[in-house]
Length: 472
Ligand code: NAD
Image 1: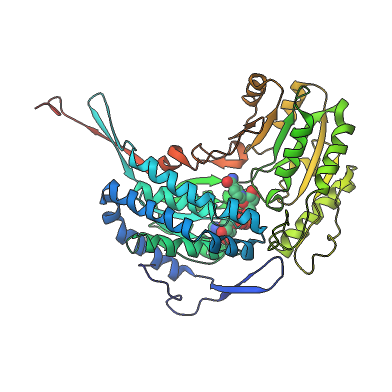
Image 2: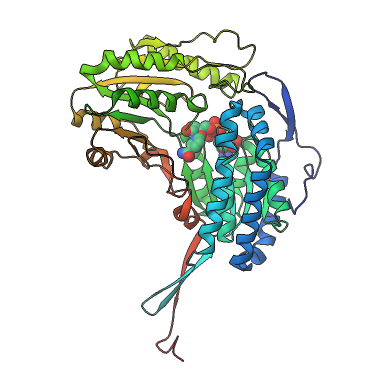
């Protein structure tokens, strides 16, 4: 903070050990910052706000463009760090975890360069002001992408930030802070405090934070929103999901199943928008089961530093236990196990590995089909007709992502419009880093990325002008 890295002021903060989930080796220690550290960081962000908010857009754009370039230059190093802290397969660490932050930073810089911060509405001038001091609290599953998706648009908007990355994977976030400093971000504009729930709570409770941007679980999101209400802070919540891949009868079933299985197991199933329910016509269920089983077998689990590995471990012992408990619940509820299961995969050593697991004949109302597991577990569900398929897709408390597959794209789009989630991929349409990302229902509120993401960090101010304003 204040442009320098330092231990907590009293030097008394307990340390958190950061573990490599593939090897269980401790790879770093970081401070578990307390309220005094958080207070220092917020003061630093407040002090820097006036100057940063007044910094010409062209200079803010230049900082972000330099940061995008430095992210690119250090891509391999970032990928290695994400592989170590998260257990992400190195191939995916390079192509996704280290790549998305480059794209998001560059896209945001372009957007900022042409952003319209002022408009006229009748005799009013509408000025979009930076929201102030932002607290950004992030999870571990995309440890750099989630951080970048908050920090970069907030900085673009002219806000200053106190970031608290996940205590389980804080290392790539610290690299981003160093990169932004190297890119010329003035001191105090971005401050990072490491730590866990105590650090997060201190930030949310702080009187001088204007907005909390939180990504994480529904339970913690609720607590954050409740705590933030005391000081009437603005809050955005990016929470969990239980998204469905809905395969219509006229779809290319083989492609739809293959892509859906890959999506469910991507990042060891630790993606908030993972398609964890595969909805297929009941009369095609056995064919789908065969296809899904064959697809699961292609997911080699193992050492994430090996180029051939498609799936690494889950993040922690606790997470592995949670996933195993869901697998047991599925078996108890009478779902049929098609692939994987509770036992550890062979030859993976001591890490927190889980076998890619598929259940079929899953009751849409069961725990397996209703709760977010956050591990590599896919539920295959048969439906009778389109109306029932849509009802099942919408039949959870979540509303984050999903997909629709049909031989007729217009038909798929019509069905996608009926899905109550923040984003729906149609026939394999790719992720768009400039399109708004966020949830309906218990998946949260507010949006990240692109123009919508930046608007979250701006406050519209209306200046009512006298009748003669603007005349020569
Ligand atoms: P989590 O809710 O346990 O923790 C998220 C962050 O909040 C961490 O930094 C944690 O230290 C902090 N925290 C914990 N308790 C806090 C408190 N009381 N006050 C303030 N901060 C607190 O989530 P997690 O286990 O890190 O991540 C997994 C969850 O994140 C899943 O539910 C997943 O769906 C969700 N997620 C959502 C999105 C999205 O964009 N919608 C993206 C990724 C992950």
